[in-house]
Image 1 (cartoon, rainbow, N blue to C red):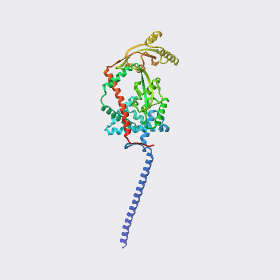
Image 2 (cartoon, helix red, strand yellow; image 1 turned 45 degrees about the horizontal axis):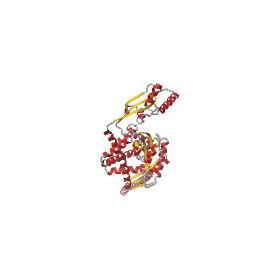
Image 3 (cartoon, one colour; image 1 turned 30 degrees about the vertical axis):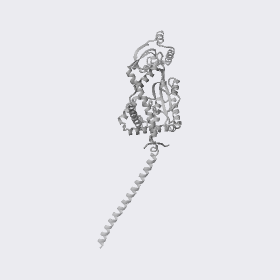
Image 4 (cartoon, rainbow, N blue to C red; image 1 turned 60 degrees about the horizontal axis):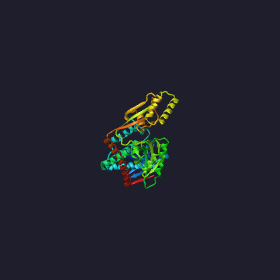
Length: 448
């Protein structure tokens, strides 16, 4: 009996121990599950709090969103690339404009998707490579530069993707519009020929558009701020690349040589009154605000046929490498006096003989492409019979004058050049119209 009881107790005891162990395990598991749930819940709230501002929706474009992270990343990039100060006031000033640009970008990419236009990683890489080359950077240095300055490289790549895709859309539209009418080319050539000897201007622009149906106060404030930033020393091209909405933004705002009849009458009047390297105040036009930079002016050459060759008269005022500042200043003063006094190449030649300056004389019929970069830059747009400003060289101070200018190209090549110009203008008009149509038909909601 005792043995049975002991055995029973032993079994019971063992069973009791098993039951107790199971209860403990159940409690542990239950507590663990509750703890994990609480941790996950707390992490959810933590990530929600951390990401609240970055994932906040600032705009809806059709069925896609633009997050606050997208906006802040683009603002970071624009402030960095334009040289504007990165502070709360500046970010607030440009927020509206940058958001507007992101909306346009979203519309471009949506349109590309609809038309089954895909941009490959290779295309994006090649585009960035061209930008690097234009800015004297080694291949791959753009990404390094952005990473070094804590920029999101995806922001820049997305912008590049939109540019490439939109360019393809516009080229397709241009192709569908048909080949250029020969009469249009002939008319443009007649204008160029008839304009020979009249003023034309080398101009760069910054263009900020506005919607005619609403207040343009924010655009006005932005363009005034950009104007002041350029006056304070930020390079014009840097600001143009970051903010201008014209196709010329990709070329640092450069429009090339333009005639007065190619401009809005109000803009033409302002440009004609600017001096070389002078910046205009912001100008309001029917489609937006412009800031204009007059880089140079000249009398039109007419229809240029081919590569330019020039004959140049030069005067070199010699200086040693270790010349004293007083000696350099004396030669510079003399050079400025010569530059102001000579009226033509005969004057230059006579002055050389009178002063007896060595290493001077005439360079006959040389192609601009064969000249030293500094001389080419000084003479390519210099009016015939006008002395250049003094140029500092290794040998001394140089004064140049173009005595004649000839061109080497047949008319067929000139016609292709004119056709290319007309196509570029048509592409810009198509681009503006298409984007405007997309905005009008899209559902766009912005949030503060």
